[in-house]
Amino acid sequence: MKIVSQIKEPVNEEMELFEKKFHQSMASNVALLNRITYYIVNRKGKQMRPMFVFLTAKLINNGLVNERTYRGASVIELIHTASLVHDDVVDDSNKRRGFFSINALWKNKIAVLVGDFLLARGMLLSVDNDDFDLLKIISVAMREISEGELLQIEKARRLDITEEVYYEIIRQKTATLIAACCSLGACSVKPGSPEVETFRKFGELCGMAFQIKDDLFDYGGYKIGKPTGIDIKEQKMTLPLIYVLNNCSDKDKKWLINSVKNHNKDKKRVKEVIAFVKQNGGLEYAVQKMLAFKEKALALLEAYPESDYKSALQLMVNYVVDRKK
Image 1: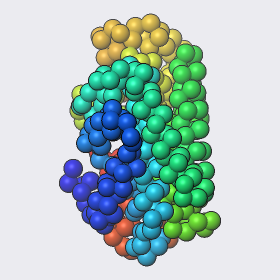
Image 2: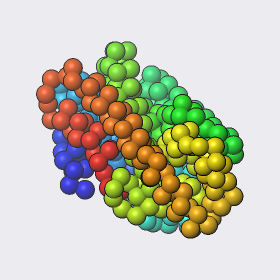
Image 3: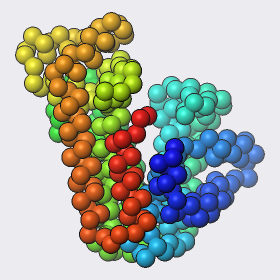
């Protein structure tokens, strides 16, 4: 967590004020809803997304943010929180960040409605303040996240996914939200400027690297940790497996596909798949691709003068690929 607090340092004041504004943005007249949103706020994660918003805005605007920046950060966090609440219902998951999920405590019906409420609050926060440019960025991100999830479900049934399709899935599912954070930060202080697109691209590249890192954790990271095989159990096609499937003999390919499709609950077989992917260069290949996304993201920052905000964003990009969990 030391690195996270280093990244946060140049925007500490903004993050403190953001916390208050974010809490206010969830207020409701319904006591049950207030109880649930209070529970959500007190179990927040590292809050990387608002940090991306503030660091981007300060980098391109001489260290200054405005009310639109706070609203942009609140909207993205409301939308993100709504998507997590809905995800837990879809995945029938009882835990989120080590705590009980909303659906585990209050059941699915309430969880879906809470997610809907958070989405509506996010939309209204933009509409009520005529932040239509910010709303458009968020809306595109929401559409892409839904499309990415459905594309993954569609492809998971067939297991014949190409690397290109995999990149499209993770771009939509994961990278689009980080891209939205960075373009929101830029758009809040310099609407209509080329920076809005530059930082959308920057966020997208960070998100791609982030998701590949997540894929690597399933294999015990890269030379670290214990493999979990959760993705294989869920028949999720990730980059190490895709690479090996596309570069092995027909006989091995048949065995791999059969293992993932029909023996994904067999712990011994899953271990064999993990070992096969490792032996055949799947992890090295994924690491190489992840680092290429990281380098492209860092290259986009080179044009900007040195500052605490630039250093923090560089640290953030490196943290995405170096993190241990």
